[in-house]
Length: 338
Image 1 (cartoon, rainbow, N blue to C red):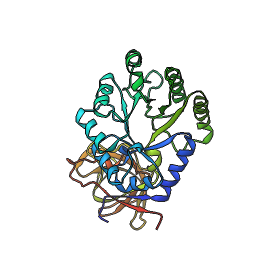
Image 2: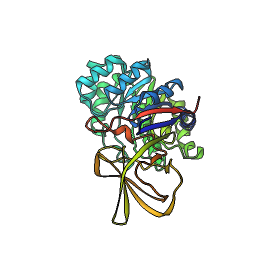
Image 3: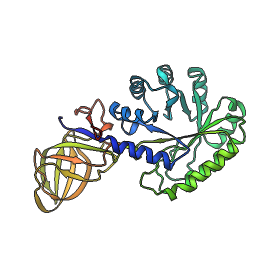
Image 4: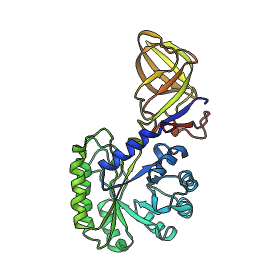
């Protein structure tokens, strides 16, 4: 295959999905497609009976091609245009989050039969909480007038350094659920980590079990990187190298205009093993030559035309390319089963 391309190990995707499903039981896992929306990746997950969290029209169309039922699709986009709500609903999306009174009113008109989930603001509970969500003063007004139209409650914290903020958010949701006398959905968001122990998750799981004993609940979560990041590598070609200021700058045929969001686990030279001194390398994309992608200290020489493997790179990396970027979206190769 021409570079750049993703290489995913199907077995690792399956292992990660099952592991996170166990750690976050009783949640149903919704795969966050923005982490990597490629149809081959979502195809692997669809066979595992995964559900999907989408944030764009194109992602919805991908799921439509895979014949994913609307009950398995959730739109988590925080600020939605009327046209987008209408199109996503018509294609087939069974759940929508809302972050304001305005969005709830739009959903009542444009997506009348979809489940409507109120995202609450939890910035007071964690510095890593996202900035949007219903604040307390607006929430009270919504609950007074529209509680009969709310099917669930959610929150989202973008980095779980520990799970205490998530447990505190569930305490807040616990209080809100007492105002509903029917089955409700609780979405505990995403960014949960694969490398945490079962003991780390036990307190969170116990909280969910206690709440399930008090109310009739359906649990869900949105996971992206924890499922596919370690399952994917990027194969890329070195276009040129330059030595300057104590670094060797390496220009590769992959990247995104603003620089990647994650550093790869390892940089492996797929050519012959060349020993060299300890060298500081900086990696750049040839279409955004001033945007540093990442830097790494290696003991293998890297020269023009070498092919490199960037490991643990399946999420939030090349998939962030866009149509203004001169490199095409990378192809995907799935390995591991056959």
